[in-house]
Length: 137
Image 1 (cartoon, rainbow, N blue to C red):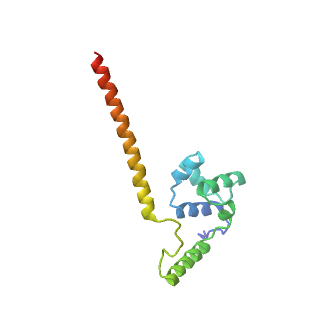
Image 2: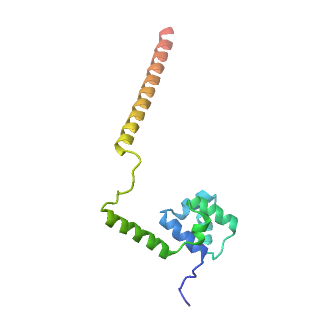
Image 3: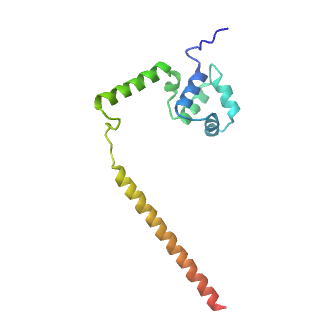
């Protein structure tokens, strides 16, 4: 019995993409409205219906073509290219950042402060209303 995998085993490709996206079978099952056992059966299937493949691709956040054309060699080449880019630029952060992370932190703080102030005002209103009710009795 041979353990060599067939190059166009769609189920195994789905399994590897799911694993690379750090997704459990249960999470994929929930996204597809099914159960973990159905995902296991699907990942062991050599072929999958086109409609189901479209749903799976959407749940995994990839295209149907990405699933059909997926290869381990392609992933390795992608990461090697990425690593080569890091070495030549000298930094993993050589990409063009379109925002200042500190600005985002300040924005989040401001939003939380506004939310806190609104909650505090609502509590004060509630207390004033309750005091008003107790004074009438």
